[in-house]
Length: 281
Image (tube, rainbow, N blue to C red; front, side, top):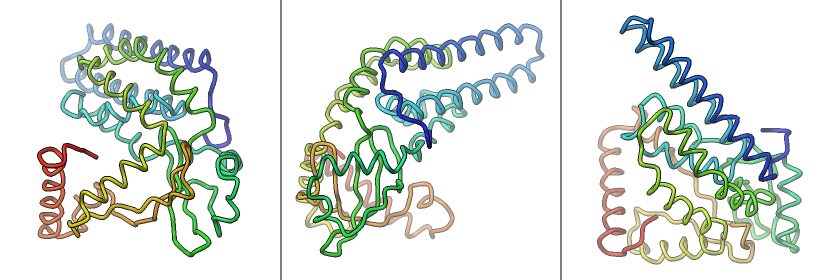
């Protein structure tokens, strides 16, 4: 997206998704017709190429739209066993990065949400450190010297998400039906409920504090501290903690003993959440 504005109109977002569904549908239909005259090896190669091409179209459009549209793509990318591997690989790029909203827009948002912004922050980089479906993360330093990560929601994201929820289900069901037989209903129900919940960062802050309390006696688990005075419904400020991406952690950059230790910590973390705390990340 870069220098372009967020698409906030419900009608424009609907048309954008409808156009995506049309392009993917025409591409799949055309490929099926051509398969009638292709040899079996050629058919498999061309089908894979077409799947990747259409997955790329989906990623580009959902990344530009952000909101519920992008979140759907992110959640679907987690269902690797239900999607063709080539499609899942392309969709995973939505987990890593999204087009950024211009710095001046995000500065306007945080200053509007935090009237005492200049008293709280020594500095804040309004160029995004990372970008996601409903907000961007920015690096900063508080007046007391603490380094922080600040999640700032995109402008009008509440209206964008609610508009998407009205438009998106039928369109995505039709779109995904062209490339996979995944059962979309349970995924959609969970997505809808969690998305509406995610729009309130004070709820997320409460969850972070609860996670920190539950794991306070587990030194291997680090939960960033919430900065309450710089957190609102659409701004979440946390202690900045450097980390390693899952892809890097699983690479040959790290020895097997280290990876095994991380794996054990993560497995125990998950099982405590399921069996003891009844509270998952």
